[in-house]
Length: 288
Image 1 (cartoon, one colour):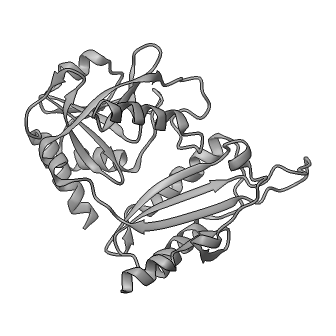
Image 2 (cartoon, rainbow, N blue to C red):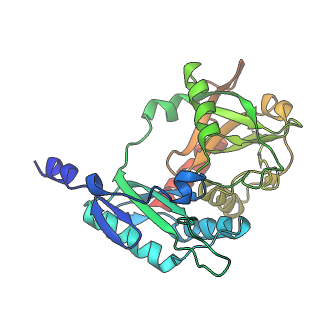
């Protein structure tokens, strides 16, 4: 009965207060709606504590700075709002979506200060099936290409529809993710995750200037490799690096680390590799 009551009274955070989800609204002139201008972060809480919250918020503000996007909300405002929404929805293990836009561009003059729009939602965490972590995921090549000259490339912007299209196309092929390459065939990332390869005892991943998103899970994996003395190299990679790898795995905040069983027609081992197992175990230690 308690869960039914909570569902009916779901709260979301908009700008400076909690409101019932059914009554949540923003201006039809908001730049996130009219121009797709805005950024998002997906966070995960474990036992009531948000994992690497500062890294997520730092990513958000770094991305805003790159795009020249003015934000009127401070990191402290956002952290407090996240705490409020977890408490209001009585959530310990949650998936949190943080969305921020520059606000409305209507009637803006050169001397105007934009009032950014902040939206935060939090729902109970639904984990990926255990069998995926045991058997690995099928991934395919995205039909689209990562454009290095796009000023939003490597950032989590609201103009995310191409990624969703690529993911839908992958799912039609019974795949869980699609791998993006640049026009010059450099390995970039997946629709919703960063890509890692293993050659021998060495972990490799594309460098940030590919460009790829500097995901929080990516940061944690690089940190673990340093702590465990595992060589981890950020370098330019291509399709031949995938097919010659002994292991391949993906990473993001929600899935944590996910082994890849098959890349297009190329098959890896029938079970996750030893490097993946070690890194994922260490990652989960950090979440605890």
